[in-house]
Amino acid sequence: MEVWERFLSLCEHVEYKKNEVLKRSNEVAKEGYFILEGSCGMFAWKNNHSVCTDLFLENSFFADDSSLLSGKPSPLEIVALEKSKCLRMSKAHMDELKATPIGQKLFLIGEENSNADKRDQQIEIMTLSAEERYQNLMLTQPELLRRVHQKHIASYLGITTQSLSRIRKKIQ
Image (cartoon, rainbow, N blue to C red; front, side, top):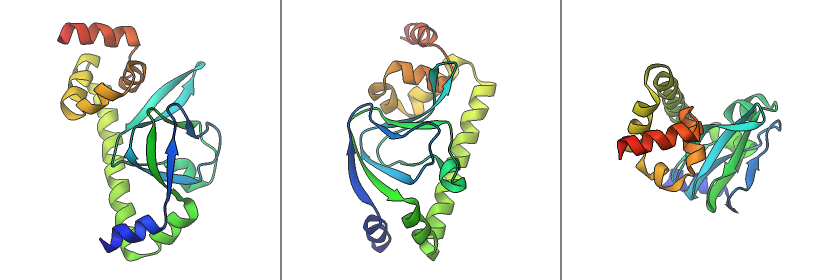
């Protein structure tokens, strides 16, 4: 409880409208987030359209980690996909928290989990068919499928919306 209170003391409660940009492409990330209510997505631009690299629901920590750590701009953009309530922590407050033993453990665990999730996502894209990836998403994160627009789901899976529509019809 003391850890959570310390964490909260370093955060700002913020609310975002649907489609509001939290961090713009090619800017330096200055904050990290924890979703209390809603959903957010991380996107990169490719050939004049956005590609979804990550989706986040309640109780998720997220940030443009590479930009946040390097202090350099990145092509990633973070967008609220629903009306969302978040805790926002500045880089300075993150560094302050990381300077404590419990903060070091929290950030290490978070980074390990994030790396494992990204590795699993990469392996799925390389080894599973689009239909298998969709079925896996149905089993592991059904809430995403109910709440996130199909164009973002398709992009996250690395397929077109038409392919997703065919897969959904086939499975039903």
